[in-house]
Image (tube, rainbow, N blue to C red; front, top):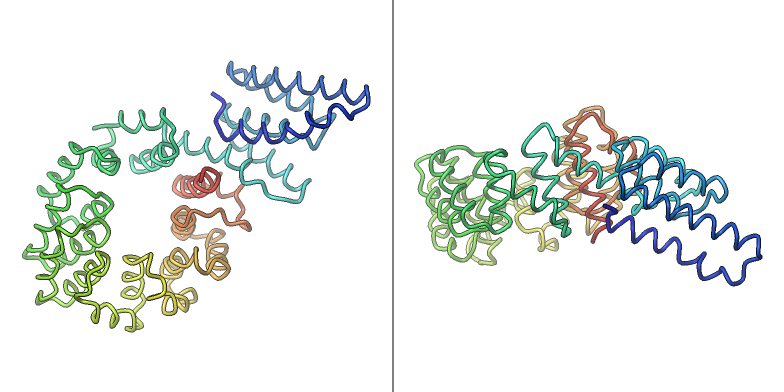
Length: 382
């Protein structure tokens, strides 16, 4: 199927030649008619799954008119649809170099192909779920159906994804899984992405757990997914004997818009402890005026992960400063740093102009490819 983004780009590209046809010479009109016919045959071949024929049709037009945007759209789409994602990327790079510009909508075509490939064959369930969620979030029905069909095959990840989409049965299932394994901090944090009464009830219950680490992690999760229902238990947690639990409860209350614990939150922001500062800022993304001044210096902190956390937070309000950190991290030799940088791009929802997208979308790490594709896809579909 020809995706929406390719069709829109093609329509925009072909509008101008059609409007100018009446002013063209007979020879030019003949060339235009031949080229349009060739492209039509190319799109027909693409729809039929004859990808090589579609590429040949696009090449025939590009040989005569190297700047024909509709033809380059067809070629990149045909290559990407035929599973030659690297070929699609190389074609884009050559076109971009010749025209001395980036075209994020053209890049969106191989980005979509990367998401579809990972959604179908990603080595980890979490990767398959994330790729399908990215596609489904833009109205892709086939991706939404595939995500729903994952069911038990994707285990807890699949259930969490369904719960995030509003499935009450899935929310009850993940809450039950948490109740059976309450001292799993990774699971608690992941459930912080699910806004559902059943999950919130279980997280509130964990605020009374005998383990202070579990209590603090539950409060952290409620900072992202809690509602006014959790306010009263969080107020009690402000008086917890453990200082970390107190801090987490204060931040969660601030995320709910409650004034209680505000003094403790301000002390955390002024602590000069990067993790404390960043944790507060991450829980209060819409209150940048409260934390921006203390997060900005962390773009140059020693810890690379903290630098990227700061860049993610500042990406919207201080894009130039954040870009400097992200650009360096995207080219880092350490795969974990590249993965985190690409994830930051996806979370910010921006396609960093100076990034080497050819390299990122073909990175050996599936996580890097996934997050880079998510960043591009989010940018071109919003």
